[in-house]
Length: 300
Image (cartoon, rainbow, N blue to C red; front, side, top):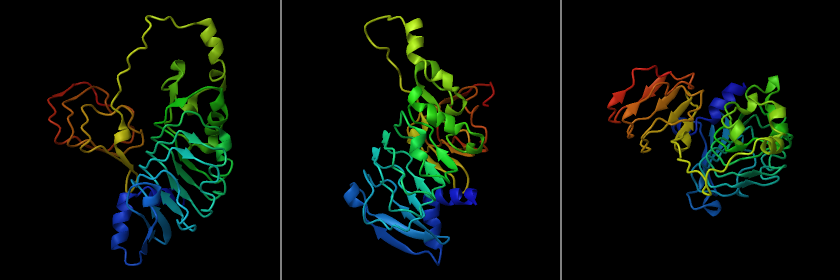
């Protein structure tokens, strides 16, 4: 049943199209412009479940006139920066909450207060650096949590969250999320870090100080990443990177993607092992790129 609920939530645009053709689908509007500068949100019923579609409305907070009986709340690609205490407490029936591709950098300890029926929470592609297990105390049924593509700062403050993710029954919580810092743990998966690796950062720095080559900080070139793309799971796991002016294949494609659309970009060559970590990839569209060279090495 959890998998069915997840597919229904992550249909996003596809579900919105399907409900238009559904004879029993009820539609209505909910406030949206006051929370941002976009059009009003749209409430609808699909397969007897009530949704609120507030994607890409430039929202910065939850509005008071949204229906309290929602089961699925779609808030992807907005401008939300902080999840405040009891922000969703009115939505006691909520089962799925999509907050991917916002600007969230802080989640207060009681942000999910009252969401004891929540099963799916999407927080990927945000700006979170630190989070603790305490945040999830109010979501006992949570079975699917996405945290990847956040700049996680893996120090002692993260110990309780990382321990929670590593419990065997939580196998669908936090998959693919990686540390951004400190340098020693960069690109390490949260689910694979040992607690003793988190809490001795200061000691390591004293024992092995990093030499200063010059007075100027190093120049770090930004890599092409998948945060510009749209992520869908209905009807199959899809990453849509069409027409994003990409010159290279993105570096951080989620490993569970089945269909990848990179068409109409500016990718002119393919390097070996471009898709090595995308274990479930079955459909790849690279049309209209002007590819001139494909390295004979393996793509995966």
